[in-house]
View 1: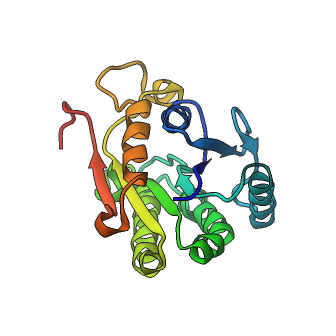
View 2 (view 1 turned 120 degrees about the horizontal axis):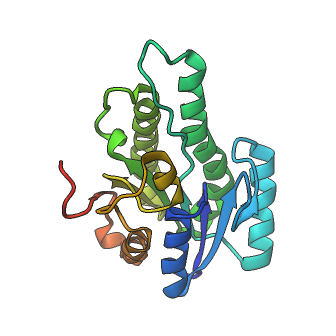
Length: 219
């Protein structure tokens, strides 16, 4: 790629910060986008106009975006009898509609330059729906389907589309808050190192989907 500017959507402490640190160590400029702004630019990814304006501001300051990493999600949990339609809609809008808004803003430039990467971060729920996770899994399955369709459409136009399945808990403040302290969790900086390697791939040998888990993860 001619530039090294990555944008992370759904940026937060933990995975977002760890990936950003690893990519910066490889020479990338990294900009995080978050509704709350913490550590990145504040923007509501559900607002298409705001997303477009934010990305134009990023490119005016740093040059063309060459990689977008999508990590926006809502971990909606509950039994099917306790969840309401709005819960499913919230999970889908947060994971998928946010991605659509960013894609629509970035893809024309990617295609015009015949380079660029779209990276979607999936989860165990992207390939296996668990009890109590029907809303979350349905959104993650949808995001995976979006990634596959985009890979087939945009790959021939020079755009690398990746779907990374993070199978297991990820080390970070949000995980500790939800599930308590623990060990044997996926290390964000290592995910960033892996992504840096994937982003350096030649179009003659592109990975589209990859599972990532710790050595001790049961699967």
